[in-house]
Length: 250
Image 1 (cartoon, rainbow, N blue to C red):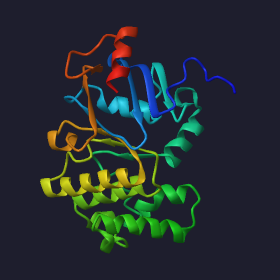
Image 2 (cartoon, rainbow, N blue to C red; image 1 turned 90 degrees about the vertical axis):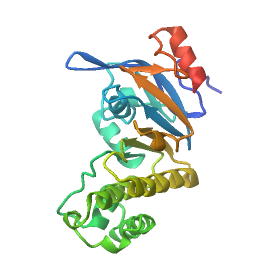
Image 3 (cartoon, helix red, strand yellow; image 1 turned 180 degrees about the vertical axis):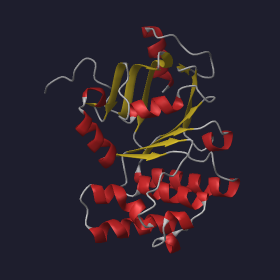
Image 4 (cartoon, rainbow, N blue to C red; image 1 turned 135 degrees about the vertical axis):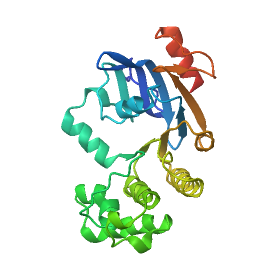
């Protein structure tokens, strides 16, 4: 049996990152962030606006290449993948849900929800069936043949969640998904997301500054000025000791 590489992540972490650094126009956005997330775990990334939550999600999901550091998904190094491989990974294995639904206005609601399956080559019939199942769970199945322009903002956000769930991804990256919603709509969206994650063993990274939303997670990781805090303490420096403490906290 061949031994794994010395720098490979633990086998029980579906998502693992080490010493991530990233900057926007020279301003540090991530400073030495290390973390591990297990399959089916729901992790809330908390912190004020500008703390690095969105940048971390984008690096972990392969949308951004970190300036330094490693990102691994199921023991495969995402940080060394080419653009095409990362695009395929995002399409087939990841789901994304942001604060804006970003639906295509020319497509019907069910087509928007089915888009990941259609792009992956699924049949029209099977993609529509899967999309309509998720739309029904979100109480908007009756709108399947409508266009997004005829829906409310909250209803469009439900369509975006159906799109993120339709191919039952391994990981969903949710970036402030409840921010634009009123309390009742927020509760429905969050309940559907967490129920689906637990029943299908989907890992969820949920960036939020809302206490009620964060409370739905299994655990929390706090970001402050691009650094990961441990147990509510001040962010740790980018040192082996700091990285070890982050690993233990996970």
